[in-house]
Amino acid sequence: MIRLFHVSDVHFGAEDQAAIAWFDEAVQAEKPDAIIMTGDLTMRARSREFEQASAWLEKLDRPTTVEVGNHDLPYFNPFARFLMPYHRYKKLESVIERPLDIKGIAVVPLKTTARFQLRLNWSKGYVGRKGLATSLALLDAVPKGDLVFVAAHHPLIEAGTRSTAKTRNGREALEALAAAGADAVLSGHVHDPFDVEETINGRPVRLVGAGTLSVRTRDDPPSFNEIRVENGKFETIARRMGQSDYTVTEPGTATAPKG
Image (tube, rainbow, N blue to C red; front, side, top):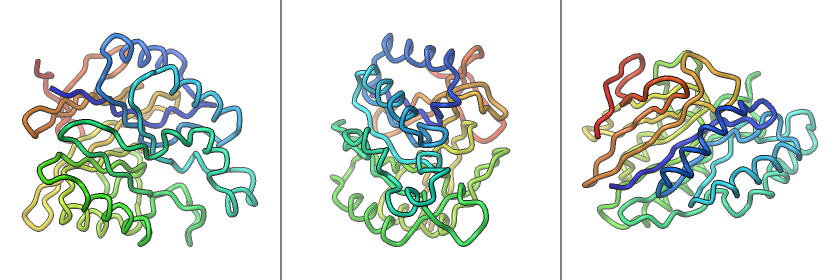
């Protein structure tokens, strides 16, 4: 069995130190095969927040890939946001959208952040044509038979959580990814875990969301997902700090974890 830790929205600058220590202990004790981080490592994209994030990821000492979140773009500096949005993120260059070498599993990145949108709330998701084309090209190169996880920050469609993604072009992107062979889209942003199945043209694709390790919790306490892969199938287990773990099925429902 392959075990992946799916973590999101750590928000250094508003991080929950106890939650981070709890996650670190799980990583060191259980040594997952890889860690997939789906964005918002920082709160305001400040240099010191990226330095904290970089040191934290290095300490985990596991194969890790990171996707960019909306909070990882400069917030107070319009010049940096428009002209150098990922300049500070280069401190983490070695792990941004890093390919993972796991037999039978492919992780394909999908950008859902935008430095500018024609709406007031720029924190919401956006899938551009170029970004989607890049992901589809990567997906096309995946060996046949591999289980394909797409890693994005924003859920492509709403999953029934209290917070929303309102991702523009998300439905179209999901349909294209499903047609190209994606099995699941992993995301964060809404700060609560979920695992829902959507049928696209007769083909099932799952949308899996991780919670947060920050103080900015919603309905669930600080949490991360453990994804267990076996025989080409997977289950999502929400690991919640201070509470029992559960196998995620749909928003608001839970069953006892297997194994």
